[in-house]
Picture 1 (spheres, one colour):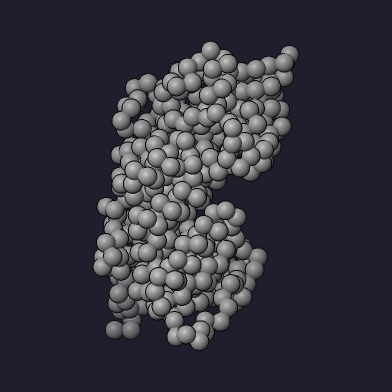
Picture 2 (picture 1 turned 30 degrees about the horizontal axis):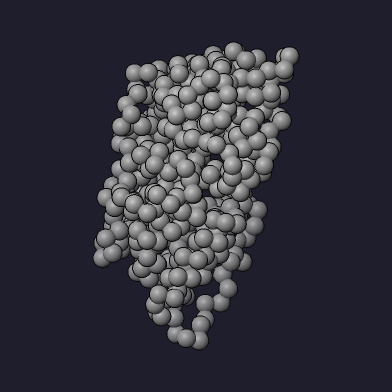
Length: 462
């Protein structure tokens, strides 16, 4: 039996499966990805680090890499900005030629873990004190899957409500008291609405801007999408139905044609025409990174940040609810020098380094505690709110399942149908639950079949 309990290693994935991923990705990345020669004349061991970030975010991480390289003379890390990193990393691991460190999103971890494509960090991280407990209470959940630590958190993303203080003041709302509950939020949104005839000029809020998180609305009514213990989709729970009934109330209240026409006029996220930055929307749900766009395109914007409102019965000021949406670092199965990879990861987890990177990214620290200077001098005016959500026991992550991509596709479709008044949310979410459960059941059946085939092969060879 192998050290991982008889499951196939990532390098043992079938050639046919690997070729299938090649076809889906459209490139032969395992053969000609960003892997220049590893030779150095100074005797250092070279580690390749694949990361998603470019631009400001990428430059900040490259600076951390340079600082690590300058801090010692045994290891040399090379940073490769890598588009489509999930697929390309899977291909490289399946092909037996992985990088040494990969930067993923937290929601990718279960799929990589289920394929045995990344190494547990429990033992590797122990000498450096890298363990789940070092992170904020809401963040630490994304580091583990099925009881093992599999990822270190690179930066801490959290969703919250940005609101335009000047527009609140202009509309007669208190800019220092953002809405806390859904009824307060609805009242504020109506007050902030500006029409010119039948045409909407400004909305208080629009659920489809930016439209990246179709699946969060039920959580603010006490729901969740997944029962991990039972491996069951819960998309049509009463709480989720309440959440999407609320979503549907906006196109019903303001007119479907009017709100869709209004949405079609928005500019790109990373531009001065961003709906919130330009003042077309008074409130938006976003992560801390939006502050970077504000600072770049409209630094004089008077904005505030608050936890996104919840159903009245759920409001607890000291235990806010919000999505944890972090970046993580993992060590691929097949990495030639996992201890050296862990040494680099451990360097990035030092408070000084975490806070340096988080400041440039405009994000809160994912760690359990932050320095006074970090919070005081942070370029995101809402940093205290983001950190409070990260430390809340009611912060939530996406469902920890390898089937998350399929579940999210179903929720994207469900939100589209709910928003466009194509049925009652209860029926739409029931269909989403059925289709998500079919994906969960199929994955579980295939996993059981693979496990049984592996056990039979071991018996035959004994």
